[in-house]
Image (cartoon, rainbow, N blue to C red; front, side, top):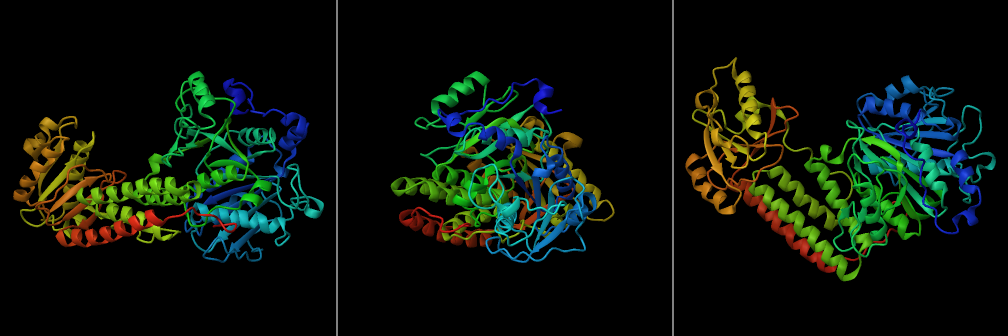
Length: 591
C-alpha cells in the first residue's frame, strides 16, 4: 500500500498551466504510465544502505521492466560491490578507469561478476565501479555519461529479453524528445528510504507540463517519519542565500505565502499535498527530463559534493524549464545538519560561491561575492581565536579555493588523527606533572561531557602510574548548572565563569595567563571563549560520537603567526577577486 493511501491524504494536486492540456492532450497520462526511467544511485562505503536502497527502488508501484538501474560505486573499500553482486545479481559490472568524471573511460563488462538476469526484476541492473572516489557530483556525472554512452550506442545495455532500453532503433520514448535516450532520469541517494509511490508521484507531476525539467521530493526525517524537514527552496537574488521562502519580488512570492498560511508552515508535522514551483530541489530523490539534461548539460565537475543539484536546478530554469516540488512524492532522509562537519561546510561554501558566479552579474555579483568572502574569512579568523585551528584552516582554504577555482576533493584530510584520550593528552603535554587542562563549556550539555571525558581518561590511566591532570572548567553563565560546576566528587575541578559579552571574556585572559593551561578541550567543534594568553600546549577536540578518543593539535604563537600570514595573503587575493570577478558561463557538459 502506498503512503498516500495509508494516511488518507488527498490525491496529487498537479499545477497545470493554462493551455497545457490543449497542447498535450493525453500525452501526460501516457508518459506517466509508460516512461522509460533510468535510475542512478551513487554510493561510497555504505554497504548496507546501498543494498537496501535497491530494494526500495524495486518496491515502487511502477513496472520494473521500464526501469534501468545504474549503481555508481565510488571506489568503495567496504565490500559494497561484492554485496550488491551477491544480493541483487546485476547483469554487468563495468569499470570506469579515469580520475575525472568529465573524462569517462568505461571498460568492457566484467563477465565474471555479471548474471543472466538481475534478482530485482529490473529491465537491467548495472554497477559502474569508479577508479577513484569522485564524490556525489562525480558519481552522478559518471551515471549521466554512462547513460549518454548507452543512448548513443557506444555501450550495449540489452536487458534479459535481449532488447535495447530505448526500443528498436534507440528512438525517443514518451517524452517526445528527439534522438535516443531514456524518457526520465531518477537520481536517488543511497542513504534514504522510499514509500512505494515515490516514483509514480514524480512521474505524474512531470507529465503534467512538457516545460517541467525537474521534479523534486518532500524530505521527511528518516528517524521521525511524521516530521517534514524540507519542502520549498528559493534563491534570494539579493544576498545569494538559499531560503525556504521567496523574497518580495520573486515570481512565487504571493502564491507561496498564501500556500504557507493555508498549510501551517514550510516544515513540521503538517499535511502537505500538491505541487509547488520552486527554484531548487534536492537530488536525494529527483526526477529529470532527459531531453532537458541533453540541453542543459551535466553537473559542474568542480563541485565534488554539495550545491551541485542546486546549481543544476538554476541552470534548468535559465534554459526555460520549470523546477517543481511534488509534496506527495516523499523521500525519507537524515537531515543535512545532522551530518555537518567542517569538511562538508567547505564544499557547501566553496560551491555556493561558484554558484553565485553563474547567477549574478555586474555590481550585484561583486556585492554578493564580497559578503561571501568576508563571511568565510571572518569565520576563519574567529575559529583560530577560539582554539579551532584545523577548522580555521579549512575555512581559509574555502575562500582560497573558491577564488582560485580549485575544484574537486579537499586535500588536507580530516584533521588531526583521532587517538585514545591517554595518547592525545600525552602528545600535547597534558599528562606532565602539574599540568592544567581547561574544559571550554558553552553548550547546554558540556558539563556532562566534561565529566564523561574525565572518567574515560581515568579508565585509560588506571593501569599506569600516570596521574590525571588538574582540571579547570571554564563555563558560560547560560549553561545549566554553571553555579556548581566542578563541585561534584569533593570538588574535582576549579571553576571559571564568564558571560556572553566581550568585556567578560577579555577579562578572563589575565586568569589564563596565570593558569598557563597545557591544553584546552573543545567539544563538537564549538567554542566562544578565546584563550589568547597562557595556552602553551595545545587543543584537544572531542567528538561526542566517541568520547574515548580525541583529536590533539599543537598551539602556540608560532602556529598562530604562520596561520595569520596565510590568512592575510588569502584576504588580499579575495579582495582582488571581488573587484575583478565576472559571471561564469559553462562551456561544455561538465563545466
